[in-house]
Image 1 (spheres, rainbow, N blue to C red):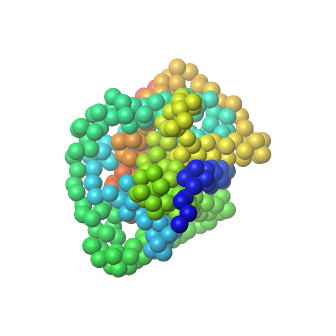
Image 2 (image 1 turned 90 degrees about the vertical axis):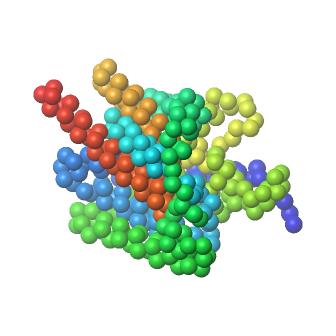
Image 3 (image 1 turned 135 degrees about the vertical axis):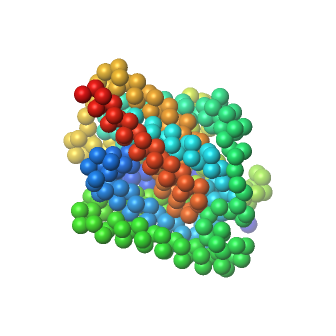
Length: 371
């Protein structure tokens, strides 16, 4: 039996992810996809159009991901989202911090990358600060608090916290049946809810919902199929090549920003390489930049004043800490995580929405006070 070429597989994973994220960056730029904006639209204008786009993307991601797992293409039990440990305090705390922070920073992690590609120097600053605080929460001073105080507050769900295994038990056949039933049911309801509104049924909204959801599904396939090695020749264990966690991954944009900064700072370290997450970050910026140039929408953007700068710095810091603590962002938990039907991802998603709502209300209060 021929040994797998790990370096070649690693390159394939990186380039495939870059291609998917390049398309995703262009789609997000064109459609105006923004989770912070979706919450703001509901609070300020009672407009659910962008939220329907987000929910449509979640529905497509759930349908596609669960079908991949049902067909045996990927094994979602190997993802950290579906692990038995339901760290509810981390999900809640991190989600609230991230949601509030993304309002102050004018967008979540993915929106920051899209805005960078469009010429926003404000987004460049957010990118650096978000990555710094994310790294501090992964391995630095905030990481100690997270590991010792928040993460131990958990409930153990055996064999895992995803809905198919919670309802299907230990019988593999039943789990697969539940995966198909719940996946189709949840996914279809979300997609139908989005399409039920006439205002949603426009090309850009549909493109955003379908395109973003399919990008999540495609990245699961890249990680769990193209990047899967049953037996690593070095360790003789199974391996998901090219991921920072060493496990099955899809798109997320908080920890990967930290890993991108790490790679740039330690470029000469031969142990560092372009992982799936880093390729996704680079692809998002490149795709958004290409679209902005092609449509002549590229514009330089800077901070208005010191207050604007301070808001973005605080927001970026909160997103960095919150995104790592919650184990994902609006894309990492709100799309990739929820697509696995993990209960922790649903909780984190809800906490992000609540945090975003609080952030929008806080901004409105500040405006009213100044007026």
